[in-house]
Length: 155
Picture 1 (tube, rainbow, N blue to C red):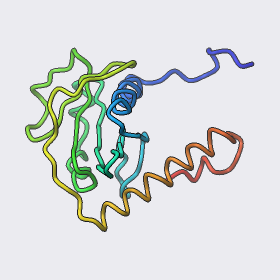
Picture 2 (picture 1 turned 45 degrees about the vertical axis):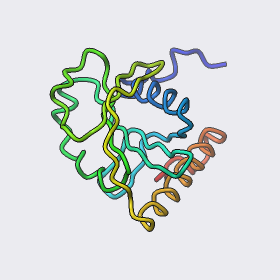
Picture 3 (picture 1 turned 30 degrees about the vertical axis):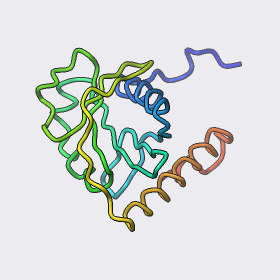
C-alpha cells in the first residue's frame, strides 16, 4: 500500500475546487474538473444540473492567480452561469460584476452571489453535455486503470 507521502499534494486551487464540487452536489449538480470546452480553454469546474444547466466555476487561490487569468471571458459562451470560487480571505472587490461568487475551502462552499443566467443555445448545450459525459467517462476509466493509455488522451 503506497503511503500518503508518495501522492502529490493538491494545489490551493484544487482544494477550492474540491469544496465547490462537494457543495454543488448538495444542489444536485454533478461536476468534472479541468474540462476543455474549446482549444486553449480549460475550466476548473464544470457543473451539470438536474435540468441540463451548465455552470462554469473558476477557482482563484490568490490575487496573483486572478490577475494572471486573461482567458476567463472566453468561458462565458460555454455555460449558462459563470462563477468565481475564492477563499474567505480573497479581495472579492477585484471580481467582475455580472459573475457569480462562491466562497470555498477544501471541504465545502457557499454561493454568495448567484451568477446571471445566459442560456446556451440548444446545439451548444448538446455539445457541452457530450463533452462533459466523455470527460467524466475518461476520468473514471483512468481512475480504474491508471496504467492504461487513456489518461494521456484525456480531452
